[in-house]
Image 1 (tube, rainbow, N blue to C red):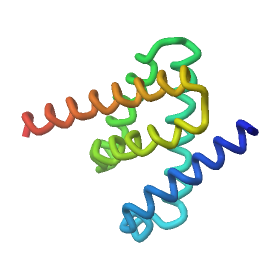
Image 2 (image 1 turned 90 degrees about the vertical axis):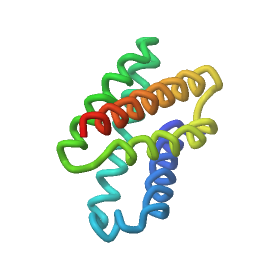
Image 3 (image 1 turned 120 degrees about the vertical axis):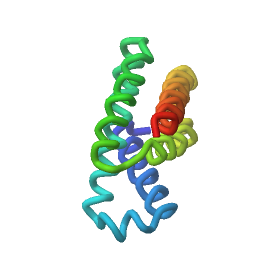
Length: 126
Protein backbone atom coordinates (compact mmCIF):
# COMPACT_ATOMS: atom_id res chain seq x y z
CA UNK A 1 0.00 0.00 0.00
CA UNK A 2 1.30 3.44 -0.93
CA UNK A 3 2.05 5.24 2.35
CA UNK A 4 1.37 8.73 0.94
CA UNK A 5 -1.95 7.59 -0.51
CA UNK A 6 -2.85 6.03 2.84
CA UNK A 7 -1.96 9.23 4.70
CA UNK A 8 -3.97 11.35 2.27
CA UNK A 9 -6.92 8.97 2.52
CA UNK A 10 -6.66 9.00 6.31
CA UNK A 11 -6.63 12.81 6.40
CA UNK A 12 -9.61 13.01 4.05
CA UNK A 13 -11.58 10.50 6.14
CA UNK A 14 -10.90 12.18 9.47
CA UNK A 15 -11.85 15.62 8.14
CA UNK A 16 -15.02 14.22 6.61
CA UNK A 17 -15.96 12.51 9.87
CA UNK A 18 -15.34 15.62 11.98
CA UNK A 19 -17.39 17.85 9.69
CA UNK A 20 -20.20 15.27 9.49
CA UNK A 21 -20.28 15.11 13.29
CA UNK A 22 -20.21 18.90 13.65
CA UNK A 23 -22.10 20.51 10.73
CA UNK A 24 -21.88 23.86 12.51
CA UNK A 25 -18.13 23.84 11.84
CA UNK A 26 -18.80 24.04 8.11
CA UNK A 27 -21.41 26.74 8.62
CA UNK A 28 -18.91 28.71 10.68
CA UNK A 29 -15.65 28.07 8.80
CA UNK A 30 -16.60 26.70 5.36
CA UNK A 31 -14.05 25.11 3.05
CA UNK A 32 -11.26 27.01 4.77
CA UNK A 33 -12.19 25.22 8.00
CA UNK A 34 -11.87 21.87 6.26
CA UNK A 35 -8.49 22.89 4.89
CA UNK A 36 -7.31 23.98 8.35
CA UNK A 37 -8.64 20.80 9.97
CA UNK A 38 -6.73 18.74 7.42
CA UNK A 39 -3.57 20.76 8.15
CA UNK A 40 -4.10 20.31 11.90
CA UNK A 41 -4.38 16.56 11.47
CA UNK A 42 -1.27 16.55 9.31
CA UNK A 43 0.52 18.24 12.23
CA UNK A 44 -0.88 15.66 14.66
CA UNK A 45 0.51 12.88 12.46
CA UNK A 46 3.85 14.64 12.00
CA UNK A 47 4.29 15.02 15.75
CA UNK A 48 3.25 11.43 16.35
CA UNK A 49 5.85 10.32 13.78
CA UNK A 50 8.56 12.48 15.37
CA UNK A 51 7.75 11.09 18.81
CA UNK A 52 7.85 7.57 17.40
CA UNK A 53 11.21 8.10 15.70
CA UNK A 54 12.64 9.56 18.92
CA UNK A 55 10.89 6.90 21.01
CA UNK A 56 9.69 9.72 23.27
CA UNK A 57 5.98 10.30 23.81
CA UNK A 58 6.80 13.55 25.62
CA UNK A 59 7.33 15.20 22.22
CA UNK A 60 3.69 14.58 21.37
CA UNK A 61 2.45 15.53 24.83
CA UNK A 62 4.37 18.81 24.68
CA UNK A 63 2.83 19.47 21.26
CA UNK A 64 -0.62 18.75 22.71
CA UNK A 65 -0.08 21.25 25.54
CA UNK A 66 1.12 23.88 23.05
CA UNK A 67 -1.85 23.18 20.76
CA UNK A 68 -4.27 23.53 23.65
CA UNK A 69 -2.77 26.90 24.59
CA UNK A 70 -2.92 28.08 20.97
CA UNK A 71 -6.52 27.04 20.42
CA UNK A 72 -7.63 28.33 23.83
CA UNK A 73 -6.28 31.75 22.87
CA UNK A 74 -8.49 31.51 19.76
CA UNK A 75 -11.60 30.72 21.78
CA UNK A 76 -11.66 26.96 21.24
CA UNK A 77 -11.65 24.52 24.12
CA UNK A 78 -9.94 21.20 24.59
CA UNK A 79 -13.06 19.22 23.64
CA UNK A 80 -12.32 19.65 19.94
CA UNK A 81 -8.77 18.29 20.34
CA UNK A 82 -9.94 15.39 22.51
CA UNK A 83 -12.62 14.52 19.96
CA UNK A 84 -10.07 14.70 17.14
CA UNK A 85 -7.57 12.48 18.96
CA UNK A 86 -10.31 9.96 19.82
CA UNK A 87 -11.32 9.83 16.16
CA UNK A 88 -7.73 9.30 15.00
CA UNK A 89 -7.17 6.19 17.11
CA UNK A 90 -9.36 3.75 15.13
CA UNK A 91 -8.39 5.30 11.78
CA UNK A 92 -4.69 4.77 12.42
CA UNK A 93 -5.03 1.06 13.07
CA UNK A 94 -5.36 0.21 9.37
CA UNK A 95 -2.54 2.51 8.26
CA UNK A 96 0.49 1.10 10.07
CA UNK A 97 2.01 -1.93 11.71
CA UNK A 98 0.97 -2.93 15.23
CA UNK A 99 4.10 -1.64 17.00
CA UNK A 100 3.79 1.82 15.49
CA UNK A 101 0.02 1.87 16.03
CA UNK A 102 0.43 0.94 19.69
CA UNK A 103 2.92 3.80 20.16
CA UNK A 104 0.70 6.33 18.33
CA UNK A 105 -2.35 5.19 20.30
CA UNK A 106 -0.48 5.48 23.61
CA UNK A 107 0.61 9.02 22.68
CA UNK A 108 -2.93 10.02 21.74
CA UNK A 109 -4.34 8.55 24.96
CA UNK A 110 -1.68 10.36 26.98
CA UNK A 111 -2.51 13.59 25.12
CA UNK A 112 -6.20 13.12 25.91
CA UNK A 113 -5.38 12.59 29.60
CA UNK A 114 -3.33 15.80 29.66
CA UNK A 115 -6.21 17.70 28.03
CA UNK A 116 -8.72 16.31 30.53
CA UNK A 117 -6.41 17.43 33.36
CA UNK A 118 -6.18 20.89 31.75
CA UNK A 119 -9.96 21.05 31.53
CA UNK A 120 -10.32 20.19 35.23
CA UNK A 121 -7.71 22.80 36.12
CA UNK A 122 -9.54 25.42 34.05
CA UNK A 123 -12.83 24.55 35.76
CA UNK A 124 -11.24 24.85 39.19
CA UNK A 125 -9.78 28.25 38.28
CA UNK A 126 -13.23 29.55 37.29
